[in-house]
Amino acid sequence: MPADTLDPRGVRFTAWVTSGILALGLVTGSWRLMAAQTVLFGLCAFVGLKLNPWGEVYRRTLAPRLEPVATEDREDVAPVQFSQGVGFVFALLATVGYAAGWVTFGMIANGLALVAALLNAAMGYCLGCQMYLLLRRFAPAGRTTPSTPDAG
Image (cartoon, rainbow, N blue to C red):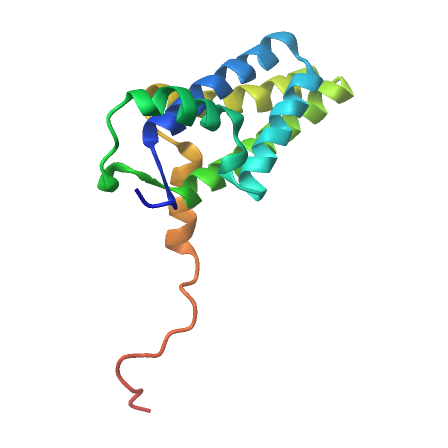
């Protein structure tokens, strides 16, 4: 099992827990709860996914009871980590909205993050991962040497 890949079931498990936290944030409008989720998104996006406590719960309690995932079915870390950055942005906007008294703004940002988390949890469709792949497709590939010399 390569160290730079993830068990997709663990990713979905953490998305379910995150969905619950985001739903609670939406219902309560608590900027403190959203701030805690923002910190977690930030740690996972900018430091590493190993800091996710829900991933640790999955690795210690559920993964040992399940069949191993085939190498080809594992997920790359980079798109998932990028999606945590997207979650960070929306959770930060929700936190600021709730803390500033802009409840509607906070609810919209919170709701968008919740929809993305639920899509990942329920269907395995990661919006942030898709954004990552799209951006990679359109990003400059870097400097390459042409295979044939110019005729000029």
